[in-house]
Image (cartoon, rainbow, N blue to C red; front, side, top):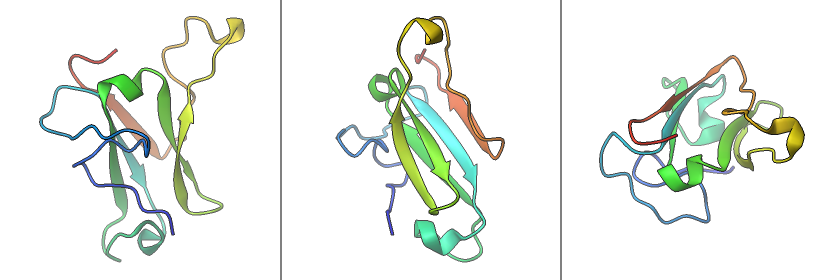
Length: 102
C-alpha cells in the first residue's frame, strides 16, 4: 500500500515542504471507493493531498483506480502542450490552485 502524507507535507515524495497555511500550492480532492487501500478509515471516501507551489508548477496528482494508488506525475512538456495550464484530470478529482500559485 502506498501512503500519501496528509496535508502536513507536499505529496511529492522528493519534496520536504510543509503545509503551513492556505494560500500556496494546490489541493487535490479524490473520491475513493476503497478507503483502506489509501490508508483511510472505512467511513472516509475522500483523499485530499497538497502539492507545494514549487511542485505544483511541474507536477500533478493522478488517482490510479486499477491499482488503488495515487501517483505524482510530471506535467507534459513540448510544443503540443504549450499554453496548457492543467493536465487532464479524472472526473472524480477536484484540484484547487491556492492563492499565490499559478
